[in-house]
Image (cartoon, rainbow, N blue to C red; front, side, top):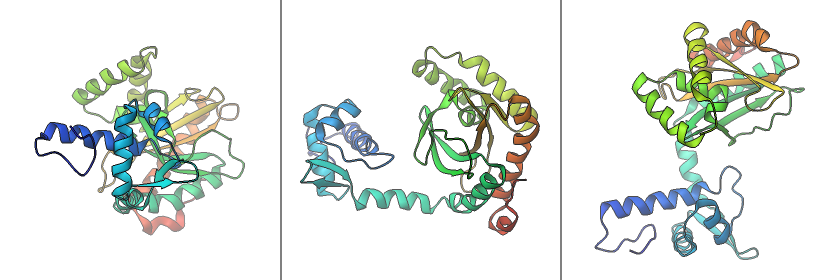
Length: 269
């Protein structure tokens, strides 16, 4: 089979087409989150695809306008067609736009890091990240991918699932994170969400950082978005996160869910 996008032999089956499409999308994702230039060799290593397959895919994606070839470095980067897909998706998610002002004011007022994220596979992808002026330097930015079972946002997302789906996702996580004690942490988060509508993690991503997370429910993307914030552990031990940061985060969530008319009252303190 000619393993390219856009042109399939007449004998190609739907299953073959799906496989080619999946490989092409995997290749495009390898450029995220910063659209770094990649060579065919680097792409093959990152995606575990054969070099010959990568060469055919990059040639086709370049011809279709999804990749741009850089002569000076013999590398590729995402081109306008690929970026347009991303912008098209984001245009339907106005929650990001209306959340940003609320989040930044909340981060400034409370001197912390606040994140809006969605689940993608076994990670939580950060869509928006806002920092207070003196906020801790946790290594997270828009596009960062946080391991789902180790992040407060991932645990909050898991708590939102129906039992059957939660069990299915848990089986996937057990394969991806065989050395993590998943059940106690996820069960505790689910109990916290049921009790307080937010959950707290202590040093699960970085040892000196504690995090709080809650779910966002909006009509456009019900159950898709999770809101989280991170604070220095020395200043906010677990008890203070529960007593202070959690209720503040719930207030931020309510303002985001309410819509743009509340933008003028977005302060968190």
